[in-house]
Every structure is written in structure tokens, then in C-alpha cells.
Length: 78
Image (tube, rainbow, N blue to C red; front, side, top):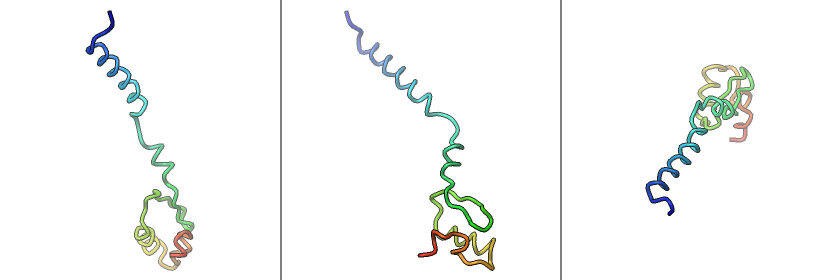
């Protein structure tokens, strides 16, 4: 005789627990890889979702004598 619904559910829970085991942990490595925007003057990095306003704020606060395009060349055309 085959296993009942209880046995199938138990096996499914065990399989799902194994899948989730690998996913848990620190997100520090992922965050480090997402730091793709970099100020070309001071080399400070920003996460890839940083808005143009935040880049402009950084440039005005840290490098008032420089232009925004010098700090962040990817914003030069905007």
C-alpha cells in the first residue's frame, strides 16, 4: 500500500525546507554587488537604485566647486 496524504505532505515540507535552507543568510554580498554608481571625484559608491536627486545632493554637499557631470558622468546628458 502507498503512502497517504500525511506522508506526502511531510515529504513536501521536507523538500521545501531544504530549498529554503540555502536562501537564508546575509544579504551583504548582494548589496555590495549592487553598489554600481560611483562618484568620480571621491570614489564613494552608491547602490544602483540611487536617484538623480541623491547624486545631485551628494555633489552639492561634498563637491560644491565641481559640476554634477564631473562627479557622475552618467547624468551628464540629463
